[in-house]
Amino acid sequence: MARATNSELETRIAQLEAENAALREHPAETRPTGDEPPTPLRGRSWGWTVLSTALVVIGVLLAPVAIVATWTETELTDTDRFVATFSPLADEPAVQDFVTEQTMAVIGETVDVEQLTSDLVDGITELGTGPRATEALNALKGPAAAGILSLIESRIAAFVASDAFADVWATALRVTHHQLVAAMANDPDSAVVLGGDGTIGVQLGPVVDAAKDALVAQGIGFAAQIPTIDRTVTVAQSDALPALQLGYGAAVAAGIWLPWIALAFLAGGVVVARRRSVALVVASLALALVMALVLVGFAVGRALFVTSVSPALIPTGVSTGLFDTVTGAMRETGVAVLVLGIVVALVAWLAGPFDTPRRLRALAGTVTQRARRFGEAHGVTTGRAGVWIYEQRTLLRAGVAVLAAVVLVFGRPITPPLIVWTLVGAVLVIALLEFVQRPPALVVVEQYDEPPLTV
Image 1 (cartoon, rainbow, N blue to C red):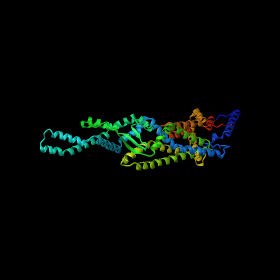
Image 2: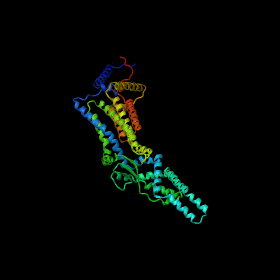
Image 3: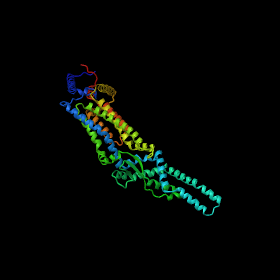
Image 4: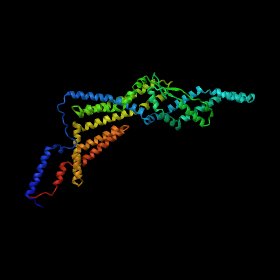
């Protein structure tokens, strides 16, 4: 083997001593990644804890209000979302039966089918039928009227159950979306009428006109005599509607900003806390708990709403479908925020200065370090790119966290799968960055990985 000169040995010894001094000055670089001890916040009194608690409580209490305000603003300003929310009602069998029943009631009140049938039979007998034929025709007046009514009802039921009715329903929703806003503003020309006593009414005119056109198109010329109907049918009643109407303007205005305000309070409560990791865990769990209570409130409200509506006014199936349709998006958002709170609390706990997470991070760091050294020993290295990733590791982790936050904040609609997959993606990216980085210790080994020297 080649012998090293004294000058070479002295040079290498000096280099090793310099490396050891650098490592002693920066011991964090020898610690497994992710096991950095928390930096205590000095000079913070208990007043900061009180302020942090107050901010978190306000943010948590604003969260349910923000969900309702966001739903109100979206439904009353986004026509596509409004149609997507309420158009499925046309496919509900209970709603179809109710519309058919109400349409037949309106036709029965405006058109005397029995009288028309009687006049028709009398006209035939006046043409000169015999006594027996006249008696037989007179006996058919009742069955003929009943048959005509049954035929009309079956035709209307078939129309209401068809795609044509669903299209008419969706078109009417889209065209009259602005009328709903007018209804909240007490516009008398609105198709949806909100009474001062809390009643909700829908005009049957468009439905009757569409059914009449369908009957005429199918060859039932008798339906052409159905006049244009100007009638509003009450579909629900709630004492809360007047208050809702009064708060409509404020809710629409707050729908855009209130979620951000609630988020700002929560973030502020975490920032000013004496122990931010603990504050983040507590705030996230509190938010999840409030969302759970909101979901329970929706379940209780559903039962109260259905029992408060008289079946004589609106069938139970219709009121149930109406409540589920109105609250569906809010319930989905509540579930998503509940999952988000649990996920953030779990991540904050795993990244915090707690004993169990620190042991887990140390174990993960040891496994990653061994895998990295194994790869280096077998010629698998990331070279200078790995060194740069190690030097910028804090910035890169922050970038991944910010990107995940942007996806969750601006993702619409926010759903549990979106939250879970965003978390999984962020964890995988951070794990990949952890594996490909090259700490200084590996670079030192590479620089001096030569055959043993003999003196």
